[in-house]
Length: 188
Image (cartoon, rainbow, N blue to C red):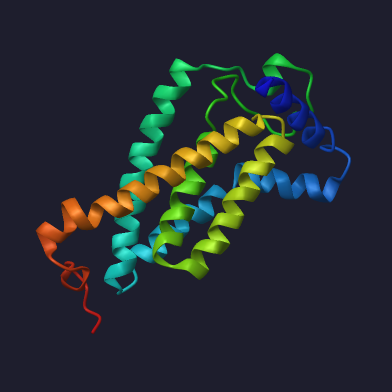
């Protein structure tokens, strides 16, 4: 039943691909290049003079490491072909015919977006919207099913939330006390 729903929703979204050239170009950009905006955000936040931003970057990187590890294991345990391998689809971007589940783009974008959201609500809301658009574009372009994208987002959000909670309790509070004393934090 879930696979039927998953394919039906995929088909409904993907069938629109190729019909709207301007929207297709935006979806291609979101699928192939928008992830670089997240990398740029991590770099910018890392080099700000606020200790809380640096904490957020460290949490995002730790979360990404854990979430990608979980995704890797799940991808091998529950291997699923990509939509363009299993069905006739409108494939709008090139992609290797490797595991579809879970979406690494979804994991990567949501882990950074939610880590930002936990520390900076307004900024995080923008990044979460961009992550959702990236996930949607992966379906539009024919390289992921909706459950691939949703599962990647869930993995990323749960891992980010757990890492956020654990940082204060286990790692940084013992080592550095407060984030006000985080090395390199010169703000007053």
